[in-house]
Length: 288
Length: 156
Ligand SMILES: Cc1cc2nc3c(=O)[nH]c(=O)nc-3n(C[C@H](O)[C@H](O)[C@H](O)COP(=O)(O)OP(=O)(O)OC[C@H]3O[C@@H](n4cnc5c(N)ncnc54)[C@H](O)[C@@H]3O)c2cc1C
Ligand code: FES
Ligand code: FES
Image (tube, rainbow over all chains, first blue to last red; front, side, top):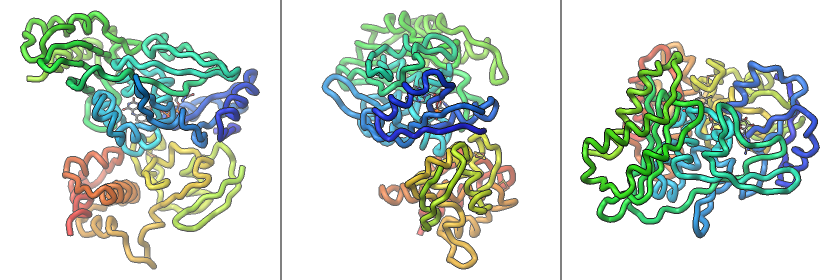
């Protein structure tokens, strides 16, 4: 590895660094848990690395409760997500996804922005954020800002809508309508620890006091080139009662989730196995 | 590029290449060989060190990013001159070391985790202790004795 590093301390310095290097080959690095492994197999001679680790800007770093949403800085680490009480209480799906990502040592540095921008179909925090209907807030080096729903920000395998001028500043998640939730993250791998998912299912259901589903967000990981938000499966759940949902409806929901799956066979699992697992996991999210 | 950081309690200023990894700073520049290179891909935890209180994989961390921070390696705990750290004592008492290649990583991860638990007044369950070590592989012991040792840190 042999590259130059720029370590901006402030946002203006960061935007200048992006602006000044538009004609250069540059990469942005946050926690480096994806990048360093990439750098080892790529030619890095002449590469410029814009290093976000030393940036001091709360808009990039903190979890902030706003009036209608929670804002999560792109540089928030998986460990910071786990330690945040509001996240654990309001968005168990995100808490669980961050807890199941890799190991303590990786979680202590791996960032939310890096997980999204690595655009892996098995990005655990990304799947949770898609289920939560999160929005990306993006700035560019000319000072423009824009926002886009995360599910459309991701355009395909290893593809996002980000241009060379842009960077993610933070992510917002709309607040829950009430306090009754059925929210969680199921991750199936071939062993318990340090495993990239064979299949993951992120679900966040909001309920009335009587258990009627009013809002549903379900996304599945590692079964398609992107992480699909399963719109028709979610619509199917609205107005069903979670306490009395029938076995038939559970199956129908699982069939609808499966319509979004288009998995590959690789060393971890065959496409057939991935579909079987997704179907079975989908049926079980409603509890006993 | 010049960085200033604390290593095992001592302030150091060092000129380094900007693409240097922390593990290479520790082993090759500072000649502290207790931190082990295993997989060099973030999988095995043999290279674990503590940066500002948190265990990280030094093979996945740029050396320039310890600028202004505090790094602790296995050499910063007990050694021949200084009394062993409690985590090291428990590893010995429980026979948790065979070839020793994973041991400094196991000790550093366990130290960071036990410091956090003690600060928060928590006594973790065996399951939680196990989870805290999910990023550390051992090819020799079969883990039971390492987990016994890590759990014993909380027993008086
Ligand atoms: C051993 C190991 C196990 C792993 N296990 C898991 C796992 O279980 N689940 C999982 O989801 N992931 C896993 N990963 C992958 C990785 O840890 C995560 O994807 C992590 O969240 C990446 O974040 P980072 O900050 O390290 O990203 P970096 O490596 O710094 O960056 C990743 C990509 O995002 C871009 N980027 C970063 N921040 C921004 C930003 N703010 N704006 C625009 N672009 C940005 C970078 O340019 C780069 O292309 C694992 C990795 C390793 C090495
Ligand atoms: S050598 Fe760093 S995790 Fe294996
Ligand atoms: S004691 Fe040999 S690898 Fe753990």
